[in-house]
Amino acid sequence: MTFCDKKYYNKLSKSFSKFLEHYLKYGYQHQLCGSPKGMSAPSYGRFKELTSLIDYECDFKDGLCKVQRKYDVAVGDSNPKCCCAGCGNNIGYLDYIPSYEDAEQLWKIYSPVDGFWTDKGCRLPRNIRSVTCLIHSCEMNYSEPVIWLFDILRNGIHSIDEYYLQHIGFYERGDCGSHIKSEDVYKHLKSRLQYERNIRITNQAHMDEFEQMKFSW
Image (cartoon, rainbow, N blue to C red; front, side):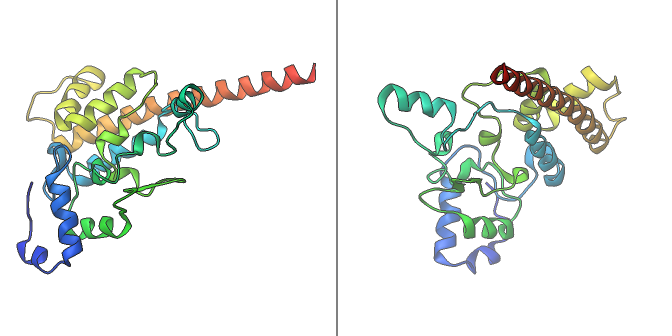
């Protein structure tokens, strides 16, 4: 927990002050201002955005994911918020907010009941969503690139070092700047995730074509 500017904090409205106090009090490893996981905020945010290439296999239909549809069939009860049900109480499970100005913008779109959840999806852009949300999946097959990405989101620069050594090349510690390693790892991991995504799209197209052929027989 880090308070960057006490003067700014003292000028805030009471409701926003309560929002910040609640944020810093509850949840996991909440941090306000500072450097996330030993990386710059923009660099860390770019790795978060790579999760858009992942298929979490939620398979939403009629507003429910496949897990909630099972509950609906089994016990006649389901929650349209699915795994986002705790968003309101935990302020989106946010583990990092870059600045007080950013916190103020989040406060304006936050609901104590729903958090940042809407029936259309999360209000937050991926680059500032919590690691808790981005790495969560109820039923998902984790490929190696996905596992690496999740490790980087959890551990930051330490996992970037390991990925660089295993997939890009050996370096003498101190000879390669962390920003250079981060950029190389980002590009390498992005290409692998894009390849997986293209394979999924191609396979789905073949499956759709096969289904159409079955109905035409």
